[in-house]
Image (cartoon, one colour):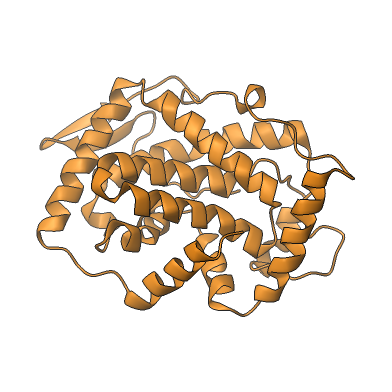
Length: 258
């Protein structure tokens, strides 16, 4: 998992709230919970859960070259600018990052602390990725060498996607079902891609939910979500339509879960 964040401030995160610059400050790292006390251990060799993981990996290799495979490839990009757009269909209108500065700022601020926390968890569990030791295809072949040397459990992409979905659903509650569904599909893209076991992804959903719950106790976070809600309301006054072809692919992906 590599989150590409952009430094908007040196020590603090900054956002435009109510026409003024507001600084969001926290101790380093951000107060994200230690999920090693929350998550169950990954499935052990020979267990029924590990067999289910193996079957999911094998079954999804047949998706190579399909629209679902391409969606998994696209979902591998974790940059805030990209992932905001990924939720356009779920939101019901085009999400334009440059018109959502509070959202962009929050994601940039959370990116590194979240990545650091997930890396600690992965290094604790030491679970090998499903493609390692095989010649099976993955949807991001250029990342194969790098991913081989990193661990699988829990899925950082899923954690991040579920966090973003939770933020957007909180700011746009009338579309919460569609947004959280897209968050699920985002996680399942890692199964389709072949770089995570199914149980890695399931752990990522728990990870993202727990982190989001902890952040909701932080005043700066709730302030920022309120600012995001205002931005989304303004964007809805002159909404652009999301790409219809992309929405159809995402709908099909949501229907055929893994």
